[in-house]
Length: 225
Image 1 (cartoon, rainbow, N blue to C red):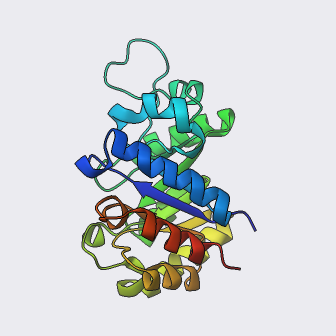
Image 2: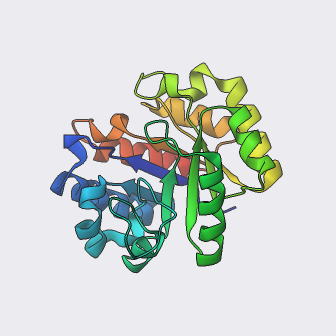
């Protein structure tokens, strides 16, 4: 089985910006090595370039656009990310929704460039709609918007739906990830029991007084057979 994946989304939290994001990437690099899990950090976009000069192999972009180099003010070209050594991006997070036809275009562009997408979906129904458009990315992440930042995890409060999601992803040959509300070891263990091959965490890591502790604890759980 491929390594499980652990994504830390810094959003635009002050606690995950600048050198604080660099420290999270330092922890991610160590945890990846120590536990055999792919630990990635999505830093604030304004910090991505200078952090990529040190930690490109552990960065996942918070977003990506269909535009290339040229007259595209305010957009994030996939080619630019690749030139920075970043070959993976989140897409369609509930805080930055993307039309499904654009998701399809980005998926096609990514396939031709070996650029991976982790596409967030708010429901199993949204997953089905994207699969019906032949969008089978590196991973789908199940993140019901009502649970994001709530402290109530998908694995504890939407387990039946999470299991439907993971089963459907596996049928399509896509890695299923679990996000929204993950705060402790039980949440991670339940996510794995329901078939998830990784997790997305934001405030539960970024706002923790000692982020290294949950990074190591969660990585240890994800590393189990």
